[in-house]
Length: 302
Length: 265
Image 1 (cartoon, rainbow over the protein chains, first blue to last red):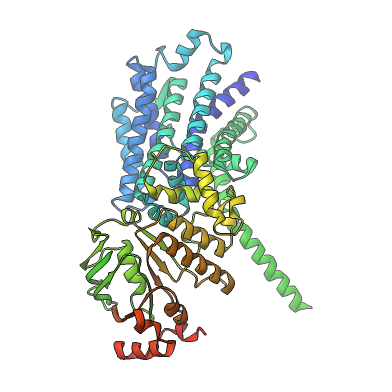
Image 2: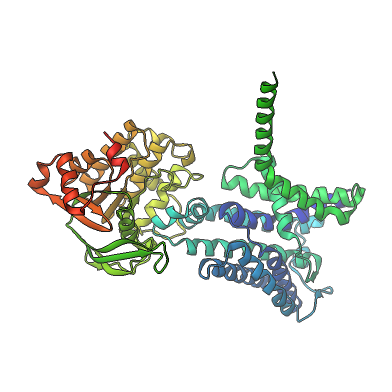
């Protein structure tokens, strides 16, 4: 039981970075960034490859840089070349498949066999005892969350927030919305790649398909968190991303061990949850309208 | 100050929907001029503003502001020099951000400070002081999202944001038309005061003929993408609304057909 809790918490913190990235791109910039799936694998692939070469810490930063580049490509496609934002993400994502294979040395998976990772490095120092993996995961995620909140309070961060809110106003504040979108998407994908990078070292393996559906799972986490905490400030949004991700991993663990539903069904379930959550306002509107129609009909009947 | 030479803009060229919105328009404004513009529907008033602000580039002609050619300068760079208010009071502010954050964004136009700096205590004091001038109690609500404010409050805030760092040119595109009369009057008073205090050169579109004659020091009338009437000084001082309409007909060759003008008062 303890191990299940521990694993759920670890994975919750690690994947929370993706939810945070989606908070930035989907909630703040109002862009559904479909680069996420490929970018996650890109982060993992770069991280595992550089770790295999003996540089686990450098691997994390290399992965983040790679992620930022992927974000830049998506942003460039949509701001400069006029590709619709969703399509821009899909195009980059498709291209990333090849890039990811390349990063893994043209193999579809790669493993670290007993090599040094950031996790083993921490274990050797003895800090955190048995909980060293959780400690590192929580530290990285909370630090990233803190930096994100701080950044969104700066002038640059404010203009990124205004871009999703009212691009006209950003232009009137002497900033180019193309620029703020680019910075935002680079940052978001940097976070996604960071998540992939640490997950790669945590699991000591990376597979070309390990990113499939990550964007929907990340959105589910964000929505779960926002349902629990409400949607108001930036600070709350970041906390919601972390909390939602942990809750999601607990649900996953429960399903995995109790087999209430087969584990294979979890992605379908996640997709349904996300679809329903995003559709909620429309469904509510429809229900209100039906009620109003019914009331009018009943009145006529009398 | 503002110098526009032979500015032309045609929308949808080469199609059946071709529309010549500006045709060889020239205009010169002196520093501190407050110019009101009236005109019939589709006369090109908003097109002129869009061309000056850089929402699109003109097909022909040139625009220079304070001695600098801005004809090909992108919109966001022009916004350092040009402040603008729209008829829609929701267009100038970001609803989910707080009053303070909106002001901080507008303050970016001042260009000092690096992009990673946060809103300082000094900034907050400055913002509160500025908000006090609006006399709407907004200085006590600086942490509230702007989406909670009324249209009039948002337009007043937008005016403050556009003029807090005095622009070289202020464009007002019927900025009080969507407000209720009392609020409109208040925002107009504010406009008058701010423009006078900071000696801002200002262009204002209005559909209210009284307002056009009463405010500012010069009045233009537009029709078919041209300026058909340009009055200032003593000639303008003695004019009434009827004179203006008569002069418009003489200049444009047809009756004034702006329904909003004809219906107001």
